[in-house]
Length: 331
Ligand code: UDP
Ligand code: MG
Image 1 (cartoon, rainbow, N blue to C red):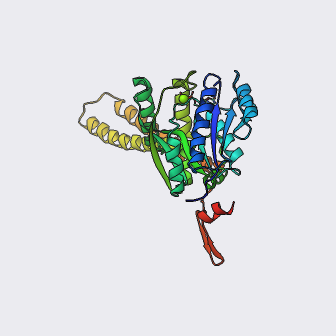
Image 2 (image 1 turned 180 degrees about the vertical axis):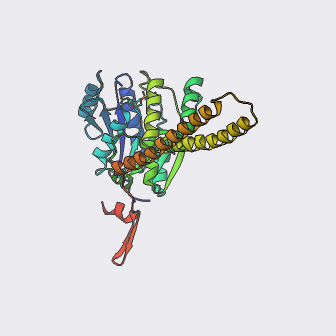
Image 3 (image 1 turned 90 degrees about the vertical axis):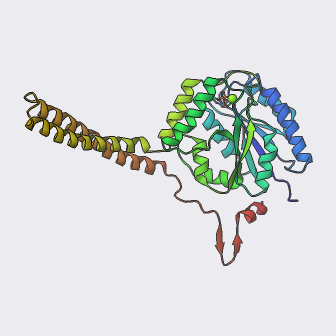
């Protein structure tokens, strides 16, 4: 059996005073069992990230930390930065002191018992373990419908995400370090992590209802999140403009032929053919030109992101085998 490694949990919290005590209690129990089973090291911790809460969240985190400084840590963000930024802030803060990190919401919707399976998958060599919900029975029909449409729509629009996976996932230190190389401002972690690559797997769990408090993701925010996901991940909408333009030009050529035939057969009013033809043709050319400009905008967008162009997973050279395994042993 390998030496137990250090697990850090990163828990974003925004106005979560109602659930925080319970979350802390349950996580502590879970950690104790993982430590006694020698799955994780005693140096493992839970890090709460306070995302500019307006209630007593930070106060509670401070209390938890002072009662149990070896176990609970806290990060206080200067202002509300949104869920994705809070998660990233936590991950980037712990990336050098842990071997693996799991991100989980504070509201206990994600099943804490899945952590065991995630850690086991990590020891099997997976660098990323995605928590995927197996059922959505506890959701209302509306939430389930909108959420499932979200994943399907994202895929169609070119932002490939793991189906039914939110932000409950384990990442290895190696993956966190590569994540640091993604400099984008509009974060969409569930799209970014698959881009990093490495061996990964899914574990399935049933998502519960919120333990207490209310959702900070109403429909309006969810739509904004979906739009952000698409526009920060793909230039497909721009390509669609080019395609529509091209299609319109083709249709206008057909319309030309049709208009000429109608004219020579004498079915038309005076001026009809020329009007119809110019509307279609000019319209088509305009959309097509917009699309071409869009293609360039898309390229600029990709350049501006300055994402890493490649990530080296292993480096074999004459002095020995530098592998990921060796890398993790060195610490
Ligand atoms: N959250 C955050 N900042 C925000 C909004 C939410 O850190 O601006 C946290 C929140 O405390 C929770 C997680 O993000 O831990 C997910 O939010 P929520 O449970 O409200 O979303 P839902 O599960 O309803 O989609
Ligand atoms: Mg929730």
